[in-house]
Image (cartoon, rainbow, N blue to C red; front, side):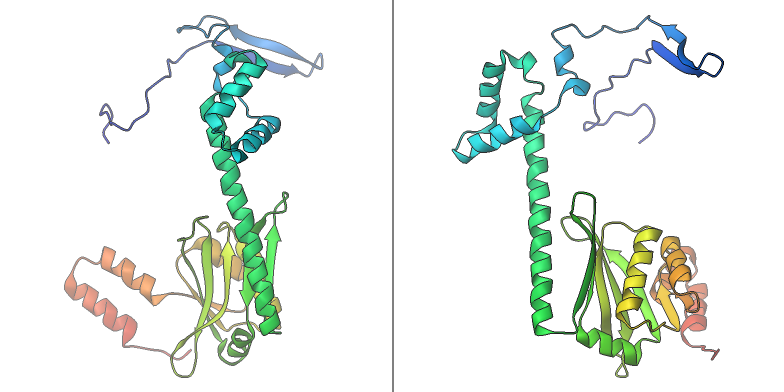
Length: 288
């Protein structure tokens, strides 16, 4: 959108470029904090005493208010009516500490967190059930400071056997984020002697950082008895490349031919050049 154009979905502009400020610095000579700049003039109207409680920085839904709302919801009292009750009990809307929209947002956040925790428990219960059926099934996961699952990796007994036989070449890809939590589904894939795709392992990762990929690769090698692949095929992700160089320094890193073809289609505009490129890539092989 060009500068100056308006959008029907754009937020209303509220900034006024006000120059009022208070600057505070630390004086090494006196070892105290001193006021270095003070400009009290504003170019806009200030909030009145009746408006101050409704400013965003002064609004917060406490745990006791959320607990009261949950209790009233269980007996079919709507959150908006619960808010009216809290306003009456506290002596007015100014004394509640938040507005009704804040309460609905807090309830929505609570529901999403509960859904995540229930799904995590369900996933771990399913993994435990697979262990009963397959003694060689393994699952590893990490948790944050609030004891919530962050990353999870798993592989079964068949994947272990397949990797020991066909794990010289490893395809490492992370391109799917179709779940409700927007987590990356990472697959370790290979090819057997019938040219069929086989899965060596899978993981759900919360992010795509070097630390997360490094944890994933180390867990994979640990659960595969430390067998190192001879070659790893990935896309052009630099983070993934760095993690592979750290954990699998002896493995040859190669780019996926599908991603190379996609880049070629985007950059080679000439059909003749594109045909020559595909011939060079797909019809000529050199044994290293």
